[in-house]
Image 1 (tube, rainbow, N blue to C red):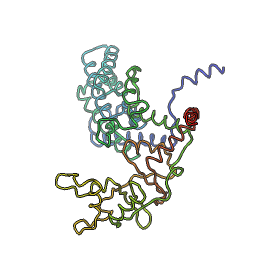
Image 2 (cartoon, rainbow, N blue to C red):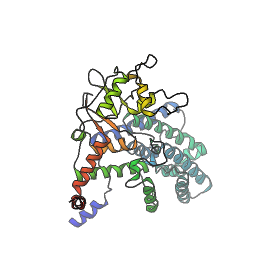
Image 3 (cartoon, helix red, strand yellow):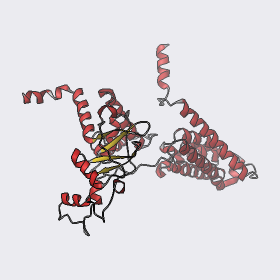
Length: 400
């Protein structure tokens, strides 16, 4: 008996667990979607005769659109293209093949092949093709009009409900493939995090060898695998948080601080950025060396013949034609972190986005520290050494 139960347990699908709130969201979405589709159809086509207001495949489509909105099988082109193609193929088979069994078989087979070819695979569309063949006199009498009503109308109404509900409840839909990450330095090199670990090309190659339809988008799979790597890092090294490594004695300026005083502050502390705060210590911007260089008066063609240092000094001189404050050149709004943020989450932000400094603010929005790329490198390096003490032994022996 235990072995039998073990076999039965293995037959259960390995679905990821979701919270009760997500279960409720899915059910409410399906309720709203089907009710809206049926009600709108009833109001618009109340005198349509024997044609059904809702076709059965819409129930299966609702499962995909509200329970798995990120699935490639649930995207707008999948449901629109899949349902219309399957309906047209099913109608054609019903009209030209007398045997319902043969017509059904060919309709399903041809629909799957066409959907795969057109990249609009949608499982409920198989039921649409079957409905076109076995739907009875009312469906057969509608002919090719069945593809528009009720299939087309039901599809568009349910899709509209899914678009509104999913986005209102925090689920990105449609699930567009994100644009490739752009190197902030405008070079051909991939962003730093794309140069380590597995790459998108590696994932594509693995999926090609797998050679099966995977019901998850490639970008979602990529994100899940990177999230798994981050979880493994936390398990191995422990969770180092921003509060553990941030600088707490932070040099700051106000929006009204002159550029001359701000530049002096940067030079005195030998730093490259200053958080800009208001009287309540809320971060309203950040001013960096780059901001100063961009604000300098470089001349008509951007000549550097006066020298970089002289140009910067010239930019901050209190001249009547150049009487600026920090508010005139600072970068805003500012990306920031919370004290409890794990530093592993900062790697993509600072490496790929090219940010060198990240203010740390508390729950009230007040500045409590700042993290630089140097802080992040030191923390990650310490974590790597603590995991591999043997890696430093040869260096210590050589030093002795």
